[in-house]
Length: 262
Ligand code: DGL
Image 1 (spheres, rainbow, N blue to C red):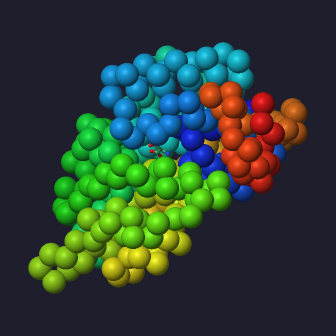
Image 2: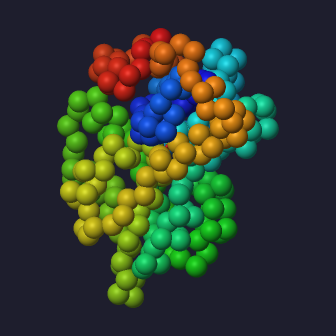
Image 3: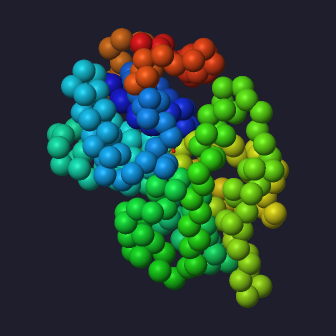
């Protein structure tokens, strides 16, 4: 079985590592639309055309059995359209607002995402449907995805800048404080140590990677009840970059995740 994992850049690797843990013998093709990174500030109409184009082309070539959109910015925009166009299962990555609303004790949660994701109707609908009894603060950062990429490829992290980016997530209201922050961009789990360092008080940082990987396994085993059929054909996991020319640091990084650059 081949699973395609898609992101604008390297953030989807936070999902890939969980997919490996639950589906160790499936083939993985990791597709990074690095030529268009970052997605966060893109115009919505242009971005949906771009995403549909890149993913449709890749599906034609790779012929995956399942696609994971390991990108909130893409999923909140294109997931429904992709599901209607293709006959294969798609697992999206959308802000984990429902579990956060169920788990909060203070009834104050925040969603840390790209500027694109916080603007989406999809995100607003999740809040209306699952979090109408809690206070939700949406925080769109224009720089954290880029900071995460730089960090992943060996760059220094400016902690003051990280502090400024996450500060609006911390709300105090009538003696209560934010207790859960949803990591609604797949790049952000790679900055979790920095977030903890500069956070004004301890919170739970909700990373949806594991439930997403388990959902992928559920869907694959539903269609292929014999688990041995999930095993890979090639034994090689591949990374593809739409730029066609990832830098050396990115190539080293994805190699560390067991991916061969195509
Ligand atoms: N990793 C992406 C997400 O989950 C987007 C980062 C970007 O391209 O701005 O939203």
